[in-house]
Image (cartoon, rainbow, N blue to C red):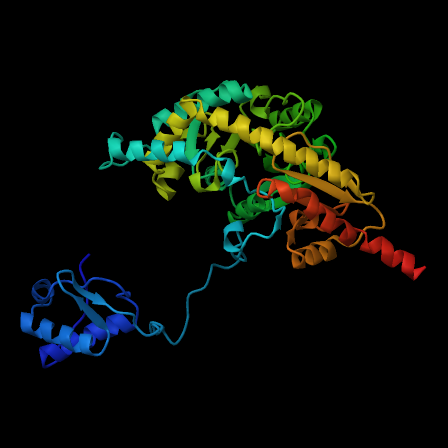
Length: 481
C-alpha cells in the first residue's frame, strides 16, 4: 500500500521536511509499528524530492529509534511511543436528529463469557461443522464463478433463494418459491426493509409484550407508534389489538421470551382479524428449528389465505451469528419495493458466503447440523427444566423449542433484579424477564435462561448456585416475622 504523507509548502530543506512528515505519521499512529516503508527510490518519486532527501530522513529516524533497517528486507517502523490523539475541532456541532434517543446495546461479543453462561440468543459454536463450512466458502472464493467483478442481485444469490425455498418446504411445510425469497443480513435487516417500504411515520405497530426489544427499537426508529400487546397461554391476545394497527410483529412458533407456542385457534383469529383490515403480519419464526417435543403447528404464512403474512427467518441460531444471513418471504405486491429498498440501503450481500450457504443447504449439511445440535440442545433443555422444577419458588413456562426457557417467580422469591445482580457477582449470567417488557413490569416476575452457550457439564452446578439467591426473599420474610 502506498504511503501518503504531506510535506508543508515552502518547507525549505527537503530532508528535514521528509523527516518531520514521517515522524509525525509514526507518532500519530498513522504508520503502525512493524509497517514496512517504501524503498527510498519509490518514496522519493511519490514526493517529488531527491532520493538522498528520503535516505537522509530514514537515517535520522533510524538513529532516533523510530525505524529499523533489516538487511535484504527493507526499512520498518520500530516500536513507537504512545500515539497522540488526532487534533479535534474545538466544538462538536453535529447531533442526532430530533427524537433520536437510541444508543447501542451491548452485545454478547463485547464481554467475557461468565463461568455459568445462561445468556440468551447464543448458539453453541462447538457444535457447528467449521471444517465443512470453511471448505465450502474457500471453494466459492477459489471458483470465482459468481462474477466477482460485477454487482450481484439485491434479492440474493439465486442458488441460495432456491435452496431456502426448498428447505422451508420440507422443514416447515411452506409452499414457496425462490421468487418469494429476499436474502437479508439477518432478522433485523429484514424488519428494516419491511418497515421502510410499508410503514409511514405515525403508523401503529403492535408487538408482543413482553417481547423482542430489537424489533421494538427498530420500528420506533422508523417513526412508528409501537404498542405492546399482552401474551397469554395461547399467544398474542388479538382482542387487545388497536383498531388502527398497521403491522403486527409476532413470534408464534416460540414466543420470545416466554417460549409459549401460539395456539391454532389464536393463529386463525389473528389471520381473520388482519384479513378484515389493511394490516400486515410479520411472522418471525424464532428458533423454530430446534424442537424438543410435539409436532410444530403450521406457520401463519401456510394458514394465510389473504396474502397478509411476511415470513422472516435467520441462520444466526441454526448456524452461527457470524454467518449473518437471513431472509424474508415477501408477498408479490411488496416484493419489488423490498428488493429496491435492499439495493438502496445495502446493495447486496456477500456472494461467496451466500453461494456456500446454498451448497451447505443443498448437500444436506444444514439438516444434519440441525439434527445433531438439536439433540444436544434437547438434553440441555431437559436438564435445566428438571433442575428448575426442583426449586419451589420457580414455575417453569412450558416450551417445546428454541434455545432458552423462562421460569416465573412465585410469591416469596427474591426480587429478580437482585437475583440477577447477585448471580453476576457469582459468575452466573441469567436474564431478568422485566428487561423484555417495555410498558411496565410484567404481570409476573421471572428469569430467562439461555442454554446455547452454557457448558453442559456446568448446568447443574450453575443452577445450584442460583437457588439460594432466589430463596433469599423467603428467608428475609421469615426473619422479619
